[in-house]
Length: 315
View 1 (cartoon, rainbow, N blue to C red):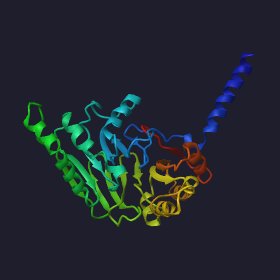
View 2 (cartoon, rainbow, N blue to C red):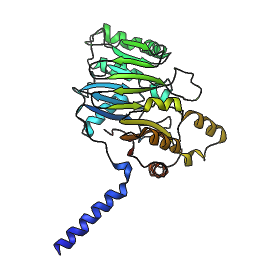
View 3 (cartoon, rainbow, N blue to C red):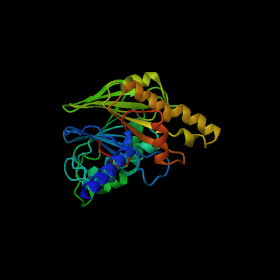
View 4 (cartoon, helix red, strand yellow):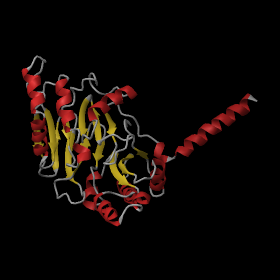
């Protein structure tokens, strides 16, 4: 009787695991490099998906890609969920020192004041180092201008404050290639193809660490020249839209999204070309469909390992 019950239990466990499909399989864990999906959202006001931001943590150093709404609080949310890879106290994220911006769309930039001022108010003593496309300096300078009274009252009043932590060293990326390098990582920027943004204004990034190659596509449509930059990626973090959902939109929006984003079928083709160890579906434009629907749609075309990214996932 006990053997029969044990057999049935084991069968149910195996069946459940098989029902999860390829999308539930995880890449081998790394003690050196972790990817934390701080925010996986889009311009849609979706409470389940915070503003776009990816943290790549290498040997305890943090490198942000994009900073949508709520980015600083998501860092502490990751700790509360069990991620212990951030250095120091996530309630005081003074370790936010290096960030990269893919493009200037608002859903990727609205946390700019958060990553400049929150770490400084809570004790950061060094300027933020920020790398991005042309006009990133305009975004930074006008953010600082908008908060100049706040900065002045903290600097000149009774509140203890240091004179450098709110400053930003902005580097404008004008050519594809290596844009940053330290003992942990080499970061290369490449042109993405995102709607009407001209060359150089929409970027993707390739991070080469001691044990992983991680590519963040940024917002982009399918383009063979862009795909060349994905080759050799262990983890490919790529945006995607639902074809089923897009069909419900008006023709003008369909035309725009097809020129600015990547369909599930196109992303599957990319996966077949690149063959990453793990494909991460990010910035998913559901257009009224569900996560399960997009998962089913993508799995029709792609048989490799992938995950539908959710906020605070760690790979």
